[in-house]
Image 1 (cartoon, rainbow, N blue to C red):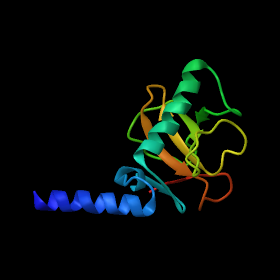
Image 2 (cartoon, helix red, strand yellow):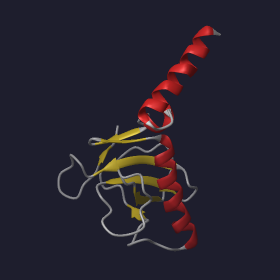
Image 3 (cartoon, rainbow, N blue to C red):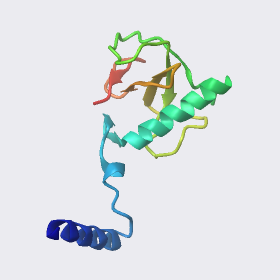
Length: 129
């Protein structure tokens, strides 16, 4: 019990010192694309935004669109796959420059993966770690 109280006090101290709540999940990297760290909640938010547009038959600057997997990734879910930008700013993509990073999802709104142009040759992608 003492450790729990000590951790809680430390979290309050750190939070008040930094001026922001201590949110470990928000800082944890579920995917790293180049030097950009994405939490699982950021990945889910981008996937859901892309899927919502797909479901409505809408797009934001042509996203989402079919991802053809020319690179031959082995995804944990079956396709047809769609790609949608995930932004390092934390915002949801709504048009304009999509940046280098993408979430890949299928028609059942299942996450297939997170990929990036960073470190790839030409217009290809590599998997984020």
